Image (tube, rainbow, N blue to C red; front, side, top):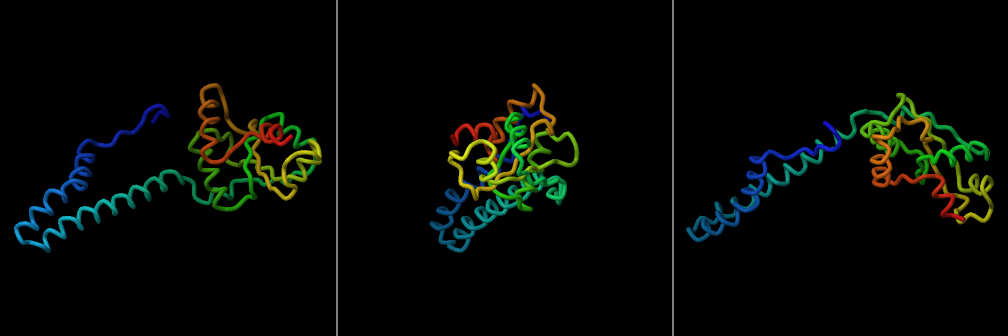
Length: 189
């Protein structure tokens, strides 16, 4: 499916959901007036229980569709960086950067997001890790970054970015907390 296409729900599914939402407000009072209290209560409980189950199922399906690659955290090559030259290269390439240290859940989410964006060049991804102290050593002690801050970066040259997907990638990265390393450095001076 093309990224510009949006999946539309089936009109019968939408009608079914509307009936489940509004039906109890029509059937319930009628049943109560007729003296069928148990049926009136069930007219409210059953449809809303069905709606709750549908919501749980859709959430599970969305999560399953997003996490296509299990154990994606094993596909990262984590490279600790302390030298100013590597950090300068990452800054020049506007590396995709995240605050924090690599954790299994975050890496699974990041790798599956990159996969869903269609920007993976190779199966393995290099993830550079460093601290705020390393950034201060490389770009100036006056930076307004805590020395204990931890960062993770992916060099954009390691990704399959081209004219057709760069703009969308740039917009989508903000949804998962990604920033450009050069912006972080510039805004910290």
